[in-house]
Length: 632
Image (cartoon, rainbow, N blue to C red):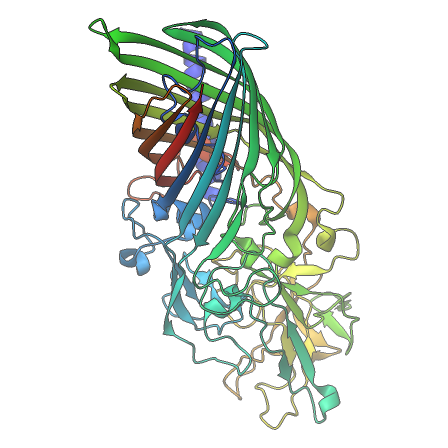
């Protein structure tokens, strides 16, 4: 009895720990969406092969079967894909004012983008200043992600009974054309009244990787006193938008991004150690050579052909049992199974990670603090006033540009299990079956050049948040250009993509290690003050809190599992030497992904949500036509 009580107590503690963790840390999102390799499809592989195409029991010589299968696949459940990519940031139209989300609403694929100065700002909204937008911007991004594949599967099976009874090999190499479209649309409710000439007017411009103009602050009486603020564009994990993307990663993503190539070249070498007229049982070695594409992390929703260039090695088993219907040998029904388990060996991938405990912080802004202190910048109330050891270097960049890195990724096990019923008679055959696909959690390790931008003493980047980067000695900016701007030392290590410690205040009350800022003995004021007669002193960070390599969430891994049902109908024309066949089939695959609970509670008690290893399989349907030739 005491042992049972201890078990219940342990379970309660685990659930409580999960709830506390979920309450304190927002749910993470995937660093890369997990998909089933287009080449690995047990349903398409075996459709139409039973009972007299492969694993024949009455052969003593060479025989073979060749097939070509064109298939079209299309994803559904777009909200689940969006959930994997954007997590808790998603709301639906009804939740735009309440911040609550109906989890059963398939339209819950919208993210609000609002400046920190916007009245009645939604608590889930992304802070607009991160995207070089005005601090009173009000807009929304809506996503309806889709994936479509056209697969041309070449499959060859050869029986080696002339060498060893029951020995065979199989080679198949599907050619893939894949198209991924995030279908991002933007609605701008208010472009902002605090607009500067060098600000963006839409979030789409930022996410498309457009370079913002450098902002010039009139820093004194002459041009030599001006301050040029460099604002770097988003270089990685860009989103499909209506703006042409710059650089050599992708061009024009408004109509979706596409990739072409052979998924993998897969091979099997097996032996049916038990075989008879109505049953067989065997095993095989399986391997895959990577011939697909390697993602570059240029896009958040980047098209993938194959398994991300992993070599695979594993083993499988196959078997069946069949019997005549009512003693009629011309009509048979059988139960068939095929399962393969492979290991995905280490391969180098380019990934973009968030900061620990800050989902989607890759889209926050970092500011550089490596300028030599000028004008006697100090912080009080230290006596004497403490000299700042650095100040703003007038450079911003998205955090994604700093956390993008090469990593080594491996997957312990990948399983593709297919079980189906087959009826055949009078040349016709019908398959009805089930398929399970899963991948265990990825293992990620740093490559040799992991995280160089945030490594070592030379790193001087901080989280910018909604910090005001400059102070002035006047109460307001002088329109004649005589105002002197003093770059401050600042950071907001507690800021997230959807919140900032200041939340619209203009005096840096939310910066780390805050102290009133002075230039020598002169107090500095906020340049955002609108009242000439009422000075608003501004704070600085002394010292700022720097980003480090240890803050990168390299544990941002994923796993996958899906369940599929399929059906296939075919007809075979018998011939003494070769037998052509035609099969028509379809499948519906249901991917398992992270879902929020009913009524969208802010906490969860699911044990799985306590882990950074997230489920992110895609749901999709497909139809195929399989043309085969059996050579006897």
